[in-house]
Structure formats: structure tokens, C-alpha cells
Length: 204
Image (spheres, rainbow, N blue to C red):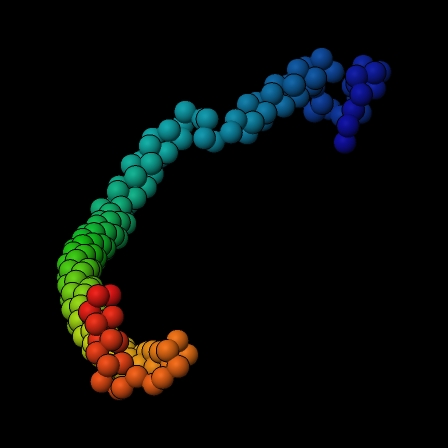
């Protein structure tokens, strides 16, 4: 029950024989209220009375955490790191092996390419030499064929010339006989005509 200060001052003292004066009641109530506030108003973590227990639990918790770190977490981390180091080393070894294989393949390719170029050059040289030899043989055959044809043509021309000369002699004899016949009015003998034509050929 709440009692106001005005009521406490005006209330008769005979109402409660055991009641204290109004001023004292107010003072005791204030003291009791202040003591209750002082006893239960502090936050435990900031209360000096709890420091020893807090330090004890801090040491226990830190010790447990250290044991867990040392026995469980640290070995797992070490295993993971070691596994990654091993995997990285394997990857580096594999990369070095692949690089060595690639270098060997490039060197083999370059050697094969040089051999192919040398072979192609040799084939080209052989083909060029064979072409020269074939051209020389064809030229020789053509020249021989042309020489044969020229010889045949010259023989044919000589034959034609001989035949023409023979025909010319006969024509000359006939012409000379006709001219003599027209000039002297008599026919000359064949022997005289041939002798005259022969003499004309010799002078020509």
C-alpha cells in the first residue's frame, strides 16, 4: 500500500500503536529502498565479487580451446596444407613433364621438317637433272631426225637438179636443131648438136 507524504503527516498516531513517526518511516523506507537498489542493481560481469569465478572460467575455456586447437584443428589444418603442397608439387612435376614432352616433340618436328626439306631439295635436283638429260636427248634425236630429213631433201634436190639438167640438155639440143634448121635451111646431125650443147655447158 502506498502512503503519500501528506497522508503520513495528517494521519493520527493512534491508528497504529506500533507505527513510527512519519519522518522516520519515510527515512527508513528510503534507506530500505536504496539498499535494495544497491544490492541488485549491479551487472554481474562488472561486479568485483564475480571476478575470480570469471577468471577461472576464462582460464578453463582458453585451456579447452587450446587443447581443441592443438589436438583437432591444428592437425587438420596441417594435413590440409601438406596435402595442398603435395598436390602443387605433383602439378609442377606434371607441368615439367609435359613441357619436356612438348620440347621433345618440337625438336622432333624440326628435325623431320629439315629432313623433309632436304629430301624435297634432292628430289627437285634429281627432277631438274632428269629434265635436262631428257631435253638433251630429245634435242639430239630431233637434230638427228632433222639432219636425216635435210640429207634426204638434199638428195631429192640433187636428183631433181640432175633430172632438170638432163631435160635441159635435151631441150637445148632440140632447140639448137630447130634454130640451125631455120638458119641454114637444113638439118644438122645429132652428134654436132650434142657437141655444141656440151661445149656451151662447159663454157657456162
